[in-house]
Amino acid sequence: MNTNNSDKTAAPQTAQKVTGDKVGTIKGFADMFSPDSDVFTFMENTAREVFGRYGYTELRTPLLERTELFCRSIGTETDVVQKEMYTFPDRKGRSLTLRPEATAGVMRAFIDAGRHAQEPVSKLFTTGPMFRYERPQKGRMRQFHQINCECLGPQEPQADAELVLMLMTFLRALGLTDLSLQVNSLGCRECRPVYRAALRDFLDSIDRESLCEDCRRRIDTNPLRVLDCKVPTCRELTADAPRIIDHNCPECRSHFDTVLRVFDAARLDYVLTPRLVRGLDYYNRTTFEVVSGSIGAQSSVAGGGRYDGLVAQLGGPDVPGVGFACGMERLALMLPALEKKRPDFYIAVLDPAAADAAMLLAQELRAAGKAGEVSFAARGIKGQMRQAGRTGARCALLLGGDEMANGTVVIKDMDSGEQRSVPQGEAVNHV
Ligand code: HAM
Image 1 (tube, rainbow, N blue to C red):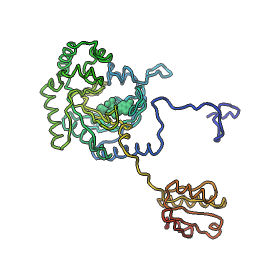
Image 2: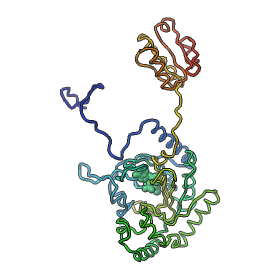
Image 3: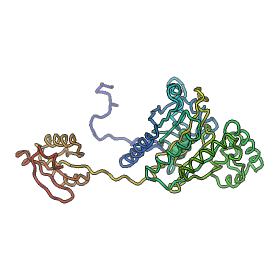
Image 4: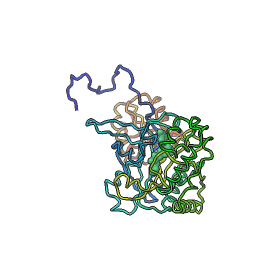
């Protein structure tokens, strides 16, 4: 701490007028006051409650990781790694990156803690800010928030199905029903190269120059991503591209069939979406996205899939896994504002001599479980009653010179306007 009083750069101790330009926030980063922050709290609380029923526990990982972690998991040819990461050297020149997603960090933590040796199945959820240098627009921020779940251990298709059912249960618990679940199977190490070759042949048969710049590059680096392009001409030209599910090996086919069978049995609607390839390289077999038709171009509210081999790729044991993440900003776009809970009281102080007693009375009421505020300044009664109304309090308590003299307090019902005087010691029974 700087204790040098003559230091001109020291922060002012009181709210004096400081001249100068406003600093402002970074583009694509946002502050969040109530009631927006209340919606986020509601989502997090609902997630904790629903995921808890499925055996998930919370894991908190750092926001900053070694850059290498994301290159080795998300893939060096992905848009996220190529163009979107906040990467910088620390003071010793080591390359660090603000997490663009949570999965890689969860895998690192899982490996570091040797969790596989302690539990056959680890079900972990994490929430918090992620960072991607993308062009900000509605539903797309550079700092955004995810609710993320990973189920590590089981390779059975029932684990994929349970995870998706849990995601849909969570979204329903938020009150969101008008959503579409898209599913696909990306095959495995055995069958994907065969599909990749077939897709390459198809892509080589179309005129490269008519594709967008990104797709021209992706044909060589990551041909599956061409299927994901949103440019209408690219979509038209690749409309007849071979479908990955038609190239799934028998094991992948049977895995996917079981997932879909459980969805059918659970009466979960889904749309088979052969072009769904996801933007991160670690996926295999089941992949899915949840899409909304009501929030604009950035319509994907959740996405995920199976990623067998990822833990081993990051230097851990060969533990399979499946997971998803929801984008909280996008979910918030679909949620109505929460109704604010009304406070129980507001204490108006009508005489400076009542200020201490008012504070103590408020403390007593809060200790009894009541919520409310006390005025700090003894102003005129009109202004204080207006403030009581602004807070939405159910009742106003008035403490002035007369009340202090006879040990009472006036309680006014803010809805009916009715008021009565009661002993201060009994106020808690009347609020
Ligand atoms: P993702 O599809 O890259 O997957 O992101 C998941 C969700 O995060 C998206 O569906 C979207 O709602 C939200 N999102 C992504 N980028 C932004 C942005 N710039 N602004 C606002 N929201 C955004 C993953 O991140 C994987 N790690 C999911 C996963 C977990 N797969 C397996 N486990």
